[in-house]
Image (tube, rainbow, N blue to C red; front, top):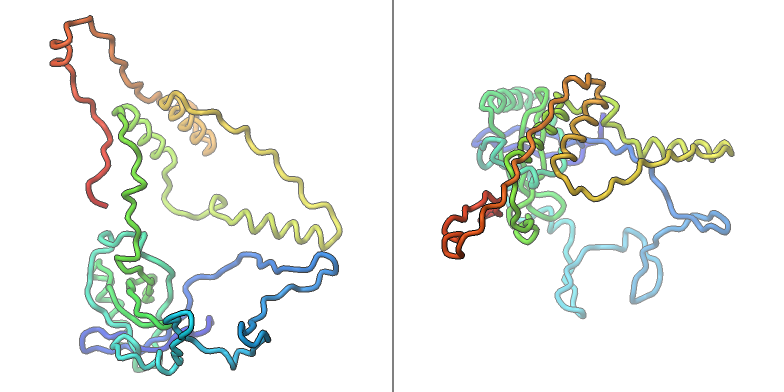
Length: 304
């Protein structure tokens, strides 16, 4: 059973559901520490007071806000716990929205919410079933670690999941990252869609979704522990040159994706090649200008 991170309640109108919050994810990455290479002594980060120049214990450390370089406003844990907010002790459901209306960039870490005690079983199950039938997610507010946060509540396998969310002003505008205006041919779009269809799948399970970095690092650690040579590093594939013909690259990518899945080459369909415009006869400047057509172009959107 994972340890409880936070205890409180879900406030749903006048209904209160006591809950416990536990982590919904696990970190399986290999932890590496810093060592002194001369004698392999552990190198640690120590907490030192800048004024006294000595290491201080955790019991001597508190929180504070730097008002100026010479003035720090101390803030105690009790003051943070007793903030005058309704969300300090409960997860307050504010509204219900369709899931596809929430930009995924705003969704963060996930936590499981478990009913806390027998009295919470019925209102917990009520919220699970109502939320499941509504085909919507709940947007809530809660206060953790000294700040009020925005959250998203949804149902996963009959259990409530709370996802932390970023406030709207925490999302940077991508406006400065828009690509320059270029001409995109319909044949190139069809080619990209054909490649996407070839690479489509129904789930995200299987050997393609394994942390190969962690596995490789574990093999190196095991080999060095047994005084063996680490596994040989496979030769990387030759780096492709600059793509000059986009349609040729798309066709080659479809064939490679089909081959990787073991599909017959007969299933590979040649994608449409964009028609090249023939040079028009020379005409007087005014007449040629009048007959110019506007190409379709990929324009950047007006709003993010």
